[in-house]
Length: 311
Ligand code: UDP
Image 1 (cartoon, rainbow, N blue to C red):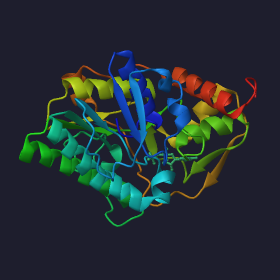
Image 2: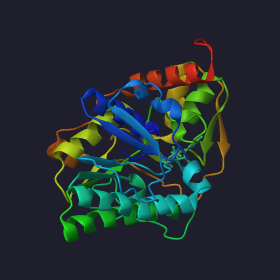
Image 3: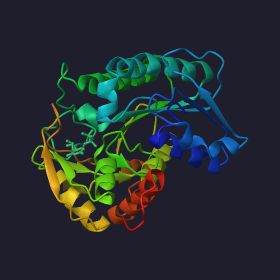
Image 4: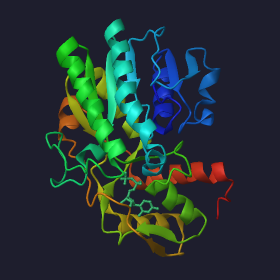
């Protein structure tokens, strides 16, 4: 697993260990944290190596390769744009070479950002997207598109057993409080009884998948997703950012209101996955109700930040 100390990666490592796998976790800890994998390190079937996958790894053998390594929050990739481009292009090439050498099954985690500011709604896998190739988000959007193209070329040219998953907005424990994403921001602001920060007028839409659902989707795609296929994974329940803020505030008992900030450049106006293909091919769909997922996430941030339960 690359990116195994990250938000989603650390949960996926734990799930694979639970299934009896041996897991080698590679992470350069640029956005992942050692705390995320602290409990896993006691397991003798778990190995951690601090490594940047942009540097080739000759000595590693694996049957399955989950390639998650990449900054993924807007704040993170805007703060390290060149590293983001490298990990999704050179890093993906390195991991695909490893899969080719050892005949490993490979899964590349792409993103809903490859649809850019989508003109088709909801987004099916057949939609090619509407990406600004020279804007600030291009370091992520375009390098993920190259990562997809490289993965598919290794399938076509070398017969590597590889598939691609496009991850839509995901939330839950192990996301960093300072990663700038909507759910950590809103939950922490509500817990602290601070106004919730709305970028733009809050009419843009997103849909939110709890991390345990994402993990079962990734495992299903690895085991049941055929080579040379791409799957959207995400929750199709769509909210405007403003409605979502009110929902979080209501659930966590905050009446501090909202405060408006400028909309980030190229912030997509609407986003919702069409998950028909994942439902039909993988037998997968999200199960966690939003209220339960928010409660679990709030519990995690309360504990992490030492906030009182009745804050
Ligand atoms: N957003 C917001 N306030 C925040 C953080 C995010 O209004 O404090 C908005 C952001 O502009 C975007 C949506 O929430 O429209 C999701 O942002 P996030 O950075 O989580 O991920 P994105 O979907 O843009 O990759």
